[in-house]
Image (cartoon, rainbow, N blue to C red; front, side, top):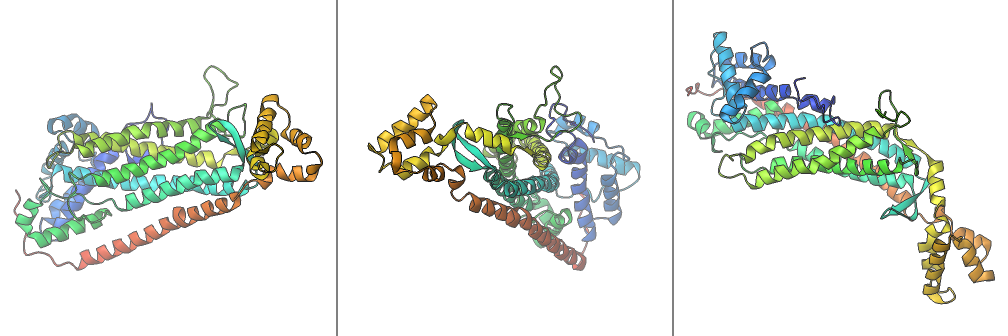
Length: 489
């Protein structure tokens, strides 16, 4: 893989997303778009087949043709983007082998190639990171069900609030992840071809081919690349980028919430959870006794870094002036790549974290006991506020006295009510298992939604994509060639 390697971005270093978003992958994606367009023209009889074949061969092995990432990057400042030097390098490679460049870049512009290449990379990266996100969701689904009866304390503004179950907490994490998976699936499935020519009119193509053939070839190109057909060029309307970026940032937010909770619950004084251990992970360079929560830390770092990248995408979209922005378009590229890398890294780390998460029910029970019966004070107030001697204010004062003086609420209630309440009635009133509301129903609902939308929707999307590809392939095979080639400008 050609860099970046992520030496200062350990959350995505070494992941499949890092490979898909590498400099080498970017160059190959640019060449893939050029090759697909050349082949579409050739198959329609609008460009020499030999030229298209030579371009395709270069796209498959650019290094063999002498086209390197380093050279393209070093020459990019000259034209403001990598497509211009890449085209020069391809033309040089074609000339060296005696092949024509007649099928290269016909009627296209740099933004067509670069935007479409980025859509290819983002589509492939989304597929990879969604696989990891579903792994994380499957793990949360299992944890939700395995710990549906594992009591723990819910915390509000850092303080003990009411009893809950760890299964419900996991179901809450799962809800956020399911929603994020659905959003990202929809955004990735909608990624379109960008093909507008110099200013979004396709004038050069229409002038040579006619409008009907131009539209047909645009649809053919989208099908070859596995992208959605383009309704209209979107070169200065960047909602496609914003939808994708927002979905990626939403996934980061959902995973960041999980990581923040897991980090808190791993603190030694709480100790309700523990990350899975692995050789060489979590150690300290100075304190050998420490086992640092590295996975959660990395996920959280990605969640904290993501919004800045998203804000750049929105700012660029809002300032995309004219028919080719000067700077706004360029600012998108690194932010979109980094946001994708962060999301892919966070999803991979989250899958590992949640698949191996160690749950400590005994610590959860011990922490729940720290608040004693006062953790049921909401229930006590609701049940007894009107009938308590002295009314609701007297009962509220009693609850406060229990908290301030560390006197068991049970004892104070018995003292105040005497024979009006039995020990069995107090046990029932102050049993945390009896004050979980609809927790079980919510757990089942969250798990059901994940399996319906987080997994089943993926299968439906894959089926639809297969059907679409088959239809496009058949249409391409039966399309009649045009009357003759276009002139090479």
